[in-house]
Amino acid sequence: MCALEVTPEITPVLATERLILRGPVVGDAQAMSRLAGDINVAGQTCALPHPFTEDDAERAVARAMRLDWNEEAKFAIEHRNFGLVGMLGFRPAALGRIELGCWIGRPYWNRGYATEAVRAGLTWVKRDWRKKLVVAGHFADNPASGQVLCKAGFLYTGDVERRLSKARGEAVSTRMMVWLA
Ligand SMILES: CC(C)(COP(=O)(O)OP(=O)(O)OC[C@H]1O[C@@H](n2cnc3c(N)ncnc32)[C@H](O)[C@@H]1OP(=O)(O)O)[C@@H](O)C(=O)NCCC(=O)NCCS
Image (cartoon, rainbow, N blue to C red):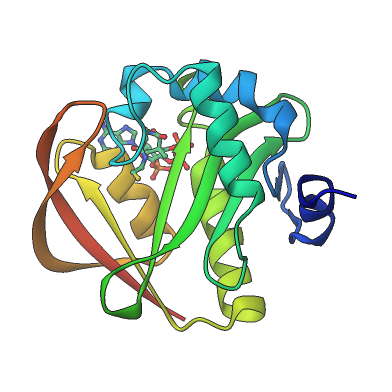
């Protein structure tokens, strides 16, 4: 059996009232490219390019399926009725820290899904991954992201970094935040 078939069976599955967070699978690529292909989504992240084609999404899924979940975690956020609505990840950052990243497709904004997913992810980080500290950053022109992170328990550190947004092709002022388990 190849690794791609095995990985999803050993990745964690988190259930919330409306959402299921699980390892990404090949079938997610089409919805990922449609939702993350929106410049309003990609342009508020560092990592997503624009355009974000289905081939790009397939490569991102293949990479996610090869992850060592001791080092890095990537969850597809699936709504119980609507299917894939976004993604949530925890990746290694400077100084041995873990950094949170998240996006929700624009048709699903302002329904509380990001807050619900981030809270579930942090519960998993604390209880199962046993990490004590998570950092996150949001572009200064993206107050909705700051609001989500505040609601999930992050605090502003006061640091502002210039971070490259691949989709915008420029560095953007990024307000840094921290969460302690
Ligand atoms: C930021 C993002 C993840 C929020 O997802 P979401 O599911 O809409 O978030 P929620 O519904 O849980 O919460 C959004 C909060 O932002 C608030 N908000 C929305 N637009 C806002 C604005 N312009 N200014 C201030 N607050 C705003 C909402 O009122 C809500 O807060 P409330 O519940 O206290 O009223 C989503 O917009 C997104 O994916 N954006 C593009 C990518 C991105 O920004 N990722 C995060 C940075 S890595």
